[in-house]
Picture 1 (cartoon, rainbow, N blue to C red):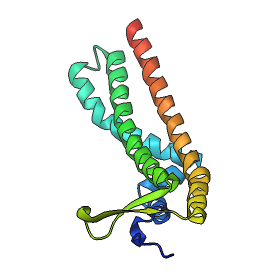
Picture 2: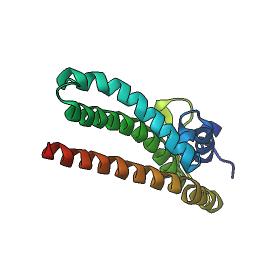
Picture 3: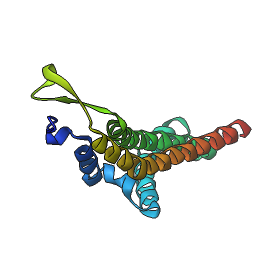
Length: 160
């Protein structure tokens, strides 16, 4: 039986495309390089958040509040970037784990469903389990760290 799904819509090919993508491959980097990318994004986000925070909390008078608010703003912006990264990988993971594949032959109006044969389903699930799930887990841990930092900031805020 031949596969009717167009090549670019096959979950395994979507995985390969994501892995080779400029943005989405960040999740596949070794941990130090992954963290370095996030730190750079966080610093860029801070340069956006800092002037906004300075408008409400002048540096000379409210430095602590300025620092907490600008850092919180940077974390929110970083979280949005991380969320986009996570959602892209989670989508491909769900397509790999599914026993059938929804695809479009020529446009949105002619969607079809293809049931994966056992061999394809097993291969796809192995790829998802061993290649993508560790990435998703690392991104969830990153989210947890960011939420923890925001929690510490909220605690500090309540004390000043």
